[in-house]
Length: 337
Ligand SMILES: NC(=O)c1ccc[n+]([C@@H]2O[C@H](COP(=O)([O-])OP(=O)(O)OC[C@H]3O[C@@H](n4cnc5c(N)ncnc54)[C@H](O)[C@@H]3O)[C@@H](O)[C@H]2O)c1
Ligand SMILES: O=C(O)C[C@H](O)C(=O)O
Image (cartoon, rainbow, N blue to C red; front, side, top):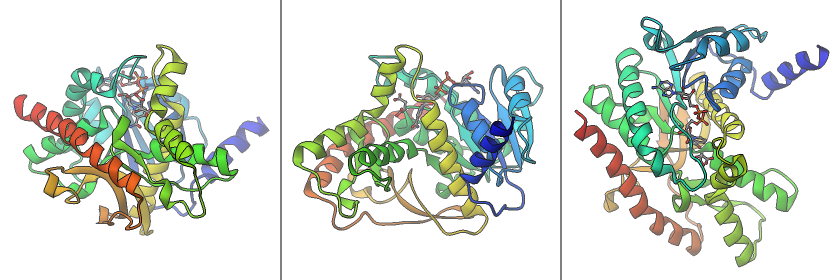
């Protein structure tokens, strides 16, 4: 009893404590492997004043369960069976986090999820554009390199698109890079990760970690581990899905960054967003360093000047791959009008 009370306090303390006025967060896919622990972490965050949980099934149980955690936020859970359930979950939301959709099984790429998840994200984005067009969208559903362009096209078609407010969540790549380097240097430091969220499009910038010295073999092995860290979990889960707990942690951390920015703090983050950075290559989306404010992206910061030749080469390799996924996402919306 004492231990569990302390656990909630500790979870709440993991987030900074000054609270913004009203911050409703909606989670779409809230009963899933990511959705449940993410809802738990959001409930423990004192910045969240209301949680709107939505899933096609099982959300009332999740809402009743996290609703007993003794932070003051209100929790409501809706399913597809509830009249206007999705609308009720979304109305008034400051943030909408979307982990709805199927996860990978061993042998699959993230792109293999496209056929199922593209339609799910398109339809949920349509509902967001209708019921909470001002909310910031945090897209977790894979393939992120395509689902962010999908949500973007939906918002454009609805006439409510604001590039400052749609994010692909790549925080798990940053968490992994930091963890894997932590094993080597014995302390936790931030490692920037840019590009996208699939295989070779994931580009950790180890050159930016002060004082870190890696042999070529170490650098290659660590880069590969970050790029294919998701596969490590898929393999270990052996058919039962992909990363859920570490993703919930990473997603809650990113949501907290946006909530802190909404309450006036100056916050720096890395996220997959609309940018002109590689406009000359025809690429619209890239995960990079951003300054956040209450409206979402305040400023897109340039890539560090001193990134290594190796990292520049990784970027060049990633661009055509990113472009393919981006076109696949936006064409999907154009072709399903
Ligand atoms: N961005 C990342 O770093 C990252 C990390 C891990 C997983 N993912 C992705 O997140 C997604 C979810 O993974 P998971 O392990 O939680 O899967 P899961 O199957 O455990 O949960 C998905 C949930 O989505 C729900 N759902 C399906 N269609 C829906 C709809 N139309 N509306 C609302 N809810 C709906 C399901 O009922 C289920 O509860 C997958 O696509 C996975 O690849 C992304
Ligand atoms: O690997 C996956 O399919 C899930 C997620 O994108 C991850 O990086 O863990």
